[in-house]
Image (cartoon, rainbow, N blue to C red; front, side):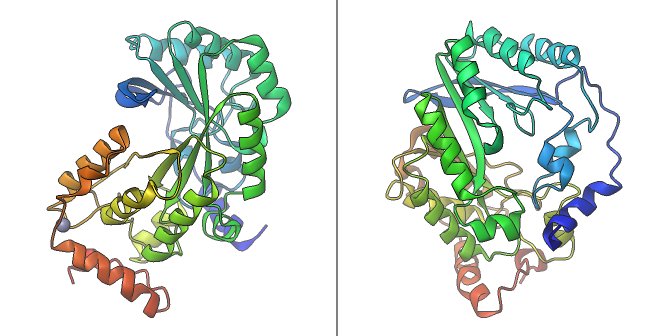
Length: 347
Ligand SMILES: [Zn+2]
């Protein structure tokens, strides 16, 4: 066990999950998304499973999704009851995104017959179904079986690559797979006409704001040949994680919204993939934020860009805090990668 693996594991060792019903999904909601270039409604379901197998063994430095998991076995029937309960709120949205805070294709989370039953049921009404999986579960056998049994209209699998840099993924994120693993999985999905969504992390711990921005830019280029959609996930501070540990000690600041804007602004020159960004916890201390005054306006522009891919939405954005952000980009590299949160100290 490496040091970072052990550190990630230490947050789960004595963790007692709060009482949660294995018959109720984590949550479900409706949101806007894009299908074939048109803005449509999407229905999002988060099922409560036993938890991501990787999180249970050690987990990633920023991921606290295990807080929503049961951490012991959830029966086939429980999973189906959760799904049916969520579907009572389904209003025929064209896209259905079905997440588990882990891997939909991991049979220890969702047994294969339940996977099939859920996909079969959704395929009757949804135009596009989107799930997520770590690459180790994306195998010829599994994808072949799904494609053979159900003629899915549009099927998308999201992979949390986070970065194309193996060193950053291993040491700063503790993700437990390589860029090569991702490339193999993405190539397999393409072969089966399954759409690939790639999640990229903005601001893992231990990287400066500028290093992270450059890392996202490089990752967008490196994944261009493999992905249909690039989803930027700016880090938010989740409970019982390495990121929270550092944040509480003033050694970590979630990314600036300006960094997201900068990346999105450049993205069209980096990749042909559709580029989007869902900002979780935007504008809060635990989430990606600016000065507090401009956050709402900037978040709105990021949301607009994600739906339209139109750079013009950023044209009129400006605020005094941009200078502070630029200072951080320049200064951090001069100070041995200092990770101090300037704004929390009101400097
Ligand atoms: Zn501002």
